[in-house]
Image (cartoon, rainbow, N blue to C red; front, side, top):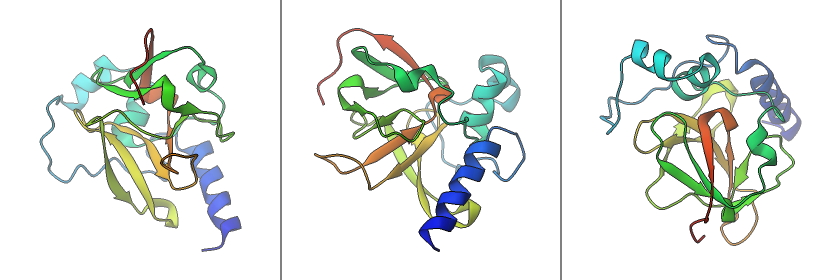
Length: 166
């Protein structure tokens, strides 16, 4: 697939991903048992409608719409679904993509799975504890890992304070 076509597909996903049932199917969790589980009705009570779409239906927020994209303070970014600490602010960087980006998650915080939706192959990033969709990881990030964890701000919360070491 050409780089131009992949870029256009990514833009389409970003613009339409927040609409439930449009282009993006719910996360296939491969019958895995997670530490934190809820019924769909319980998740809908615990999360805002926008958070539910992102975390439980693999939606995507509009680029540059999350306040967490501009968060510069020291602290920890956690899963909005189960409160598991995911990323240290020490690994956050400005990727100019419109989503909060990190070059490394905290140890044992996330898991990756293949995502072949929208006609492209990507690595989806899920919360290790609840299986919530956080975003995707790409290999165009900065040193030392060369990775860009491109996360949805709606999928996370931020707690200012001392940031764990990178």
